[in-house]
Length: 94
Image 1: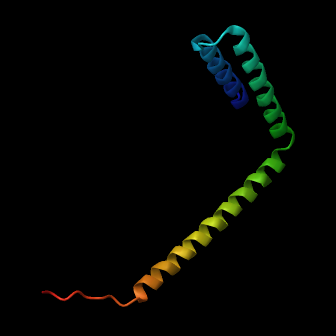
Image 2 (image 1 turned 180 degrees about the horizontal axis):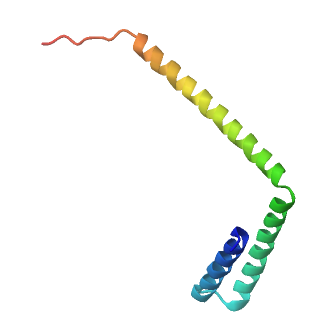
Image 3 (image 1 turned 90 degrees about the vertical axis):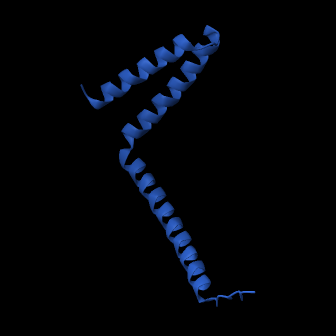
């Protein structure tokens, strides 16, 4: 079974389980399912049609996050160095 078939089967099983256990009225539930299904289909079509663009977007996000973490690490390292350079004051025993 292909990966996409497994994903679709899992989605249907989850939707059916959610529908059976839902405390909402059927009309409200049908509207929610239709709305969410439309969103999912749009996302899948976008991913299928433009996988390289999605990967480039993800790559850019990862690089941005890595740079943020690198900057935070550098700031913390500098704080740590400055703390070590400060003379320690010893308390005299009474």
